[in-house]
Image 1 (cartoon, one colour):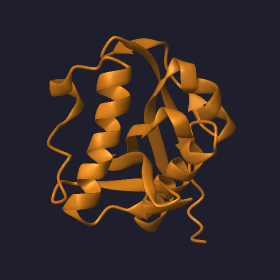
Image 2 (cartoon, helix red, strand yellow; image 1 turned 135 degrees about the vertical axis):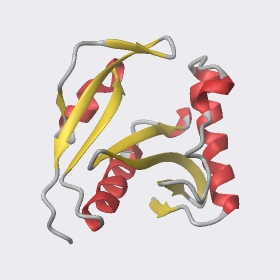
Image 3 (cartoon, one colour; image 1 turned 90 degrees about the horizontal axis):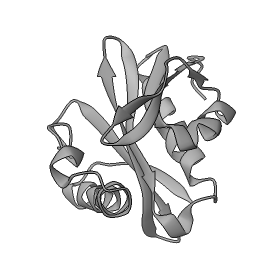
Length: 148
Protein backbone atom coordinates (compact mmCIF):
# COMPACT_ATOMS: atom_id res chain seq x y z
CA UNK A 1 0.00 0.00 0.00
CA UNK A 2 1.47 3.30 -1.10
CA UNK A 3 0.32 6.92 -0.75
CA UNK A 4 1.58 9.27 -3.41
CA UNK A 5 1.26 13.01 -3.84
CA UNK A 6 -0.60 13.59 -7.11
CA UNK A 7 1.56 15.30 -9.72
CA UNK A 8 0.00 14.32 -13.06
CA UNK A 9 -3.36 14.85 -14.70
CA UNK A 10 -3.75 11.05 -15.06
CA UNK A 11 -3.36 10.55 -11.30
CA UNK A 12 -5.77 13.41 -10.61
CA UNK A 13 -8.38 11.85 -12.92
CA UNK A 14 -8.03 8.52 -11.07
CA UNK A 15 -8.61 10.33 -7.76
CA UNK A 16 -11.66 12.13 -9.15
CA UNK A 17 -13.06 8.78 -10.37
CA UNK A 18 -12.69 7.34 -6.84
CA UNK A 19 -14.50 10.38 -5.40
CA UNK A 20 -17.31 10.08 -7.94
CA UNK A 21 -17.76 6.39 -7.11
CA UNK A 22 -17.84 6.97 -3.33
CA UNK A 23 -19.50 10.36 -2.89
CA UNK A 24 -21.79 10.59 -5.93
CA UNK A 25 -22.71 6.98 -6.77
CA UNK A 26 -22.61 5.49 -3.27
CA UNK A 27 -23.58 8.39 -0.99
CA UNK A 28 -25.78 10.41 -3.34
CA UNK A 29 -23.85 13.70 -3.32
CA UNK A 30 -24.91 15.73 -6.38
CA UNK A 31 -22.21 15.58 -9.06
CA UNK A 32 -22.11 19.38 -9.32
CA UNK A 33 -21.36 19.63 -5.58
CA UNK A 34 -18.48 17.13 -5.65
CA UNK A 35 -16.03 18.97 -7.90
CA UNK A 36 -14.74 22.49 -7.35
CA UNK A 37 -11.99 24.91 -8.26
CA UNK A 38 -9.50 23.01 -6.07
CA UNK A 39 -9.68 19.93 -8.32
CA UNK A 40 -6.93 21.14 -10.59
CA UNK A 41 -3.18 20.55 -10.46
CA UNK A 42 -2.63 24.33 -10.47
CA UNK A 43 -5.12 24.99 -7.66
CA UNK A 44 -3.98 25.81 -4.12
CA UNK A 45 -4.66 22.27 -2.90
CA UNK A 46 -2.56 19.13 -2.80
CA UNK A 47 -4.05 15.72 -3.54
CA UNK A 48 -2.87 12.25 -2.58
CA UNK A 49 -3.81 8.89 -4.00
CA UNK A 50 -3.31 5.47 -2.41
CA UNK A 51 -2.53 2.39 -4.45
CA UNK A 52 -3.15 -1.19 -3.32
CA UNK A 53 -1.49 -3.78 -5.58
CA UNK A 54 -0.96 -0.95 -8.09
CA UNK A 55 -4.70 -0.14 -8.27
CA UNK A 56 -5.90 3.32 -7.14
CA UNK A 57 -8.21 2.75 -4.18
CA UNK A 58 -8.32 5.90 -2.04
CA UNK A 59 -7.73 9.63 -2.14
CA UNK A 60 -7.85 12.87 -0.20
CA UNK A 61 -6.69 16.45 -0.46
CA UNK A 62 -5.43 19.26 1.73
CA UNK A 63 -5.77 22.97 1.29
CA UNK A 64 -4.87 25.84 3.55
CA UNK A 65 -7.51 28.02 5.14
CA UNK A 66 -6.42 30.78 7.52
CA UNK A 67 -3.21 28.99 8.49
CA UNK A 68 -4.90 25.64 9.10
CA UNK A 69 -4.65 22.57 6.88
CA UNK A 70 -8.14 21.52 5.84
CA UNK A 71 -8.34 17.82 4.95
CA UNK A 72 -11.04 17.17 2.40
CA UNK A 73 -12.58 14.61 0.04
CA UNK A 74 -11.12 11.65 1.92
CA UNK A 75 -12.57 8.43 0.54
CA UNK A 76 -11.82 4.80 -0.18
CA UNK A 77 -13.48 2.44 -2.64
CA UNK A 78 -15.87 0.12 -0.80
CA UNK A 79 -14.00 -3.20 -1.32
CA UNK A 80 -10.85 -1.70 0.25
CA UNK A 81 -12.29 -0.28 3.46
CA UNK A 82 -11.12 -1.63 6.84
CA UNK A 83 -7.62 -2.26 5.45
CA UNK A 84 -5.91 0.75 7.05
CA UNK A 85 -6.04 2.86 3.89
CA UNK A 86 -7.83 5.75 5.62
CA UNK A 87 -4.97 6.03 8.09
CA UNK A 88 -2.47 6.03 5.18
CA UNK A 89 -4.38 8.90 3.52
CA UNK A 90 -4.57 10.96 6.74
CA UNK A 91 -0.88 10.38 7.51
CA UNK A 92 0.12 11.46 3.99
CA UNK A 93 -1.95 14.65 4.22
CA UNK A 94 -0.57 15.41 7.70
CA UNK A 95 2.98 14.99 6.38
CA UNK A 96 2.26 17.56 3.66
CA UNK A 97 1.01 19.97 6.36
CA UNK A 98 4.11 19.34 8.49
CA UNK A 99 6.39 20.02 5.51
CA UNK A 100 4.70 23.41 5.19
CA UNK A 101 4.96 23.91 8.98
CA UNK A 102 1.19 24.08 9.36
CA UNK A 103 0.56 23.46 13.08
CA UNK A 104 -3.03 22.28 12.92
CA UNK A 105 -5.41 20.39 10.66
CA UNK A 106 -9.17 20.20 10.57
CA UNK A 107 -11.80 18.32 8.62
CA UNK A 108 -15.54 17.89 8.28
CA UNK A 109 -15.89 14.24 9.23
CA UNK A 110 -19.00 12.25 8.50
CA UNK A 111 -20.46 11.29 11.87
CA UNK A 112 -20.28 7.59 10.92
CA UNK A 113 -16.45 8.02 10.69
CA UNK A 114 -16.06 10.09 13.87
CA UNK A 115 -14.62 7.16 15.87
CA UNK A 116 -12.05 6.50 13.14
CA UNK A 117 -10.81 10.10 13.32
CA UNK A 118 -10.71 9.98 17.13
CA UNK A 119 -8.32 7.00 16.89
CA UNK A 120 -6.04 9.16 14.73
CA UNK A 121 -5.90 11.94 17.34
CA UNK A 122 -8.67 14.24 16.11
CA UNK A 123 -11.06 15.91 18.53
CA UNK A 124 -14.68 16.75 17.77
CA UNK A 125 -15.17 20.50 18.01
CA UNK A 126 -18.70 21.15 16.81
CA UNK A 127 -22.25 19.96 17.01
CA UNK A 128 -23.48 17.80 14.18
CA UNK A 129 -24.29 19.65 10.94
CA UNK A 130 -25.52 18.62 7.52
CA UNK A 131 -23.36 18.78 4.41
CA UNK A 132 -24.75 17.46 1.13
CA UNK A 133 -27.48 15.70 3.11
CA UNK A 134 -24.95 13.77 5.24
CA UNK A 135 -24.38 14.43 8.99
CA UNK A 136 -20.88 15.77 9.76
CA UNK A 137 -18.88 17.23 12.66
CA UNK A 138 -15.89 19.56 12.64
CA UNK A 139 -12.79 17.75 13.89
CA UNK A 140 -9.38 19.25 14.69
CA UNK A 141 -5.89 17.98 15.45
CA UNK A 142 -2.73 19.74 16.60
CA UNK A 143 0.32 18.49 14.72
CA UNK A 144 3.75 18.02 16.16
CA UNK A 145 5.91 19.60 13.49
CA UNK A 146 8.73 17.12 13.77
CA UNK A 147 9.78 16.04 10.32
CA UNK A 148 10.33 12.30 10.18
